[in-house]
Image (tube, rainbow over all chains, first blue to last red):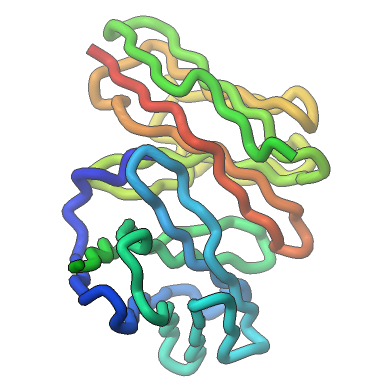
Length: 111
Length: 114
């Protein structure tokens, strides 16, 4: 799952700090959103999802926020760890089940 | 469940040869997606199936690419003839359509066309 080499924006954070990764989506008809994490050599891995009837959802150390007014999605990672270093993608879908990905952001955790 | 299973993991072939990538979706999932990931274009949806029927193939680059899903547990993506610009990582994913739930990806096939 080779996201290595993609010329993506990079977010660099200190280990232990909180990370916020942002995503703007384009389709106002989308009603389901997913954050994926992709490590080198692997496929995208599901992190957390949210439906359009919610504006916040929490998981273990992760929170997703959805602002439908401005079509903005964010992923918050609490107490970022070295194992969180990866490329993160937001994805959106609607009634047609067609899952469309954003460009991705590289998260780099400094020890 | 073993997840979405793709084969082969790596494929190196010469330009002009036929390449077939394989995918076994998660049992019970009724939607299947083929994606391509490259440095330049990121993750692109090539085609997806609902209940074994192709729904949207607008992402298929050209006629050299074809995909089939003969049954609920197997799909193939074929490139004939292959070209160096087809070199990429190809992912298969499956989900349960209708609920938009459980989009799960395989580990991908890294294709190199020389």
